[in-house]
Every structure is written in structure tokens, then in C-alpha cells.
Length: 326
Ligand code: HEM
Image (cartoon, rainbow, N blue to C red; front, side, top):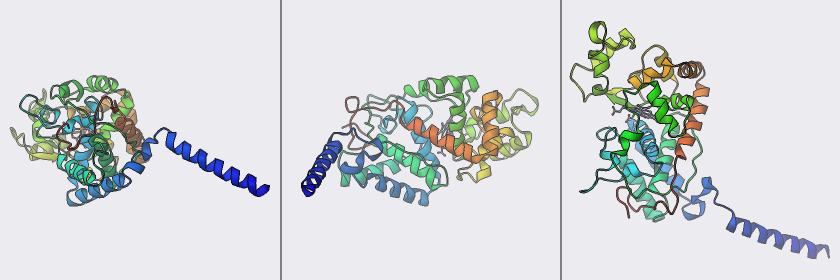
């Protein structure tokens, strides 16, 4: 009798487990576990390899995510190529000649298509790659859900509406982040991404040579730093790249960005403006003294950014190539 009940209990449990597995809503973090179990591993390995060869790609991949997600959601619209009738986001203001890393995503997509065709979206690849890139250079990590679908359109004119310009002041930045659901604090936290990567002399020419005070240097810029920047960026030189944050050597993910902001060494106007309001200054002080606060809030901010206006199966598709719609 005991044996009979035991057997019945085991069979019932097995049936319940089977049903739960079959009908449970997809666990977003495990989304590819069945369909493409190697997906996350492949992305991780390929990102590591790309960054091992060229560490600058870490910053490029992080920025790629920001620019993808802020323009109509995390949907890989930034990856679509322009064609004869349409200028796509990648060729629009803020992205053209500036956003990089497209080939890393192309290579990953090609590898994934070979093992599980049309399963892993380009949108998911961007998000996973950005997370893995930052973790690989000593930054924080965060959890990434999967199951985003790819956009079927991309318009260059959207960039101006959604991507904040480097000349933006605190109030414009706050408005642009608020329209995407981010608080002022989250905006200051995410701007900490500028602890790595590069900008170009063209974007700071007006701060170095066109200010309103003595020597035409922007008075909000630390004078000693301005001299150093002038040395790197001659008048009229717009194309030369320079580090956003030289303190960390350019590619070590730490909180020195905020230490520099507090010393008036934020390189872009959009960086410098962050400490002009109490809320920004407060976070900069916290982050400068407690890197772990920066890391944990940056991770939460990135997780939130990764889930911005995500498309579902009726709104998008899983592209075969990240550069073209199917
Ligand atoms: C707050 C508003 C922001 C503005 C106005 C802004 C603007 C810019 C500009 C102008 C550059 C330099 C581009 C160039 O010279 O080619 C840059 C670089 C970069 N931005 Fe931002 N950004 C902002 C926020 C963010 C956020 C939220 C992230 C990521 C979470 C981010 C990540 C990066 C990275 C990693 C780079 C370096 C890219 C590279 O080295 O290729 N930025 N940003």
C-alpha cells in the first residue's frame, strides 16, 4: 500500500513538473536555455575576444546600447543600414562617424545564426554584449533578460529627438532622460559611462577657443586642464580623438569620472553641467567617495536601460542579418 502511494505521488509530481515547465511563462533570464543554450556563452566569449584584441571596443559597445535603447527602445534599430530611400539612425546626427562596434555585433550574429538560426535577436545581442564588455574591464555586471524583438524600421531624424547633444545643459538633459522614464539621479549615474572611451576635439573647440571670458576658455573648465586640452586639441582641429577620462587610462571602469567632475574636469558640456544642480553634485560626491555606490547604481541603471520600450513578436522580428530587415 505504502509503495502504491509512493509511486502515485512520484508520477503526480512528474506530471506537475512537466506541466509547469510546458506552461510556465518564459523566464526571461533563461529565455534561450532551450532554444539556443549556447547563446549567452557565445556572446560572452566573442565579446571577450574582441576586447582582448582592442580594449576600445568596450566603450563602443556600451555606447551602442545607449544609442539603441534611447531611440524608440532596445530594438537594434541602430544596426539597420541606410538604403536608397531611407537614412537610418546609424547615419544620423550623433551616430555617424562616431558610434562604433557594429562589426562585433555582426560577427556574433553570424556565429549565432550558424548554431540556432533566427532565434537570438540583434537587440538581445547588443544588450548582452554591452553587459559583458563592461564586466570584462572590471566594471559591474547586471542581469539581462532576453526575448527582445528587432525593429523593422530605423529613421535618422529620430536621433535629434531622443539622443541628448553634448552641448546640453542640466535642464535639457533632465527632460530628455525624463521622457525615457529616468530620474535626474539615474541620469547622473548613467553618465558615469564616460569614465571610459573617447570623444573628439571638434566637440570641445567651443569650450577651449570660443568662451566668453579671458583667453576664450570656458570659465567652468579647470584652467590647468584647459591648457592640457588645448595642447591636445589645436584650434580648428575637429577630428582628433581624445580620452573622455584620462585619469583611468581611458578604459578602466571606476568612479574617477566623478572625482574629475568635482574638479571641473568634465570634458563635455553635458558632463560639466551635471554638478551645477544639487542632485547631480550630491551623487558625484557619493560616487567619488564610494565607488561601490556608483557600481551598484550603474548596474541598476543599465538593467533599466536594457528593458526600455522592448518590442514583442507582433511589433518586431528576429532578423537574419543585423543590418537588414528580413
Ligand atoms: C547624458 C547624456 C549624454 C551625452 C550628451 C553623451 C554624449 C557623448 C558624446 C558627444 C560622446 C563622444 C562621441 C564622439 O566624440 O565621437 C560620447 C561618448 C560616449 N558615451 Fe555618451 N553621452 C551621454 C550619456 C551616455 C550614457 C548614458 C552612456 C551609456 C550608458 C554613454 C556612453 C558613452 C561611451 C561609452 C562613450 C565613449 C564611446 C567610444 O569610446 O567609442 N553616454 N557620449
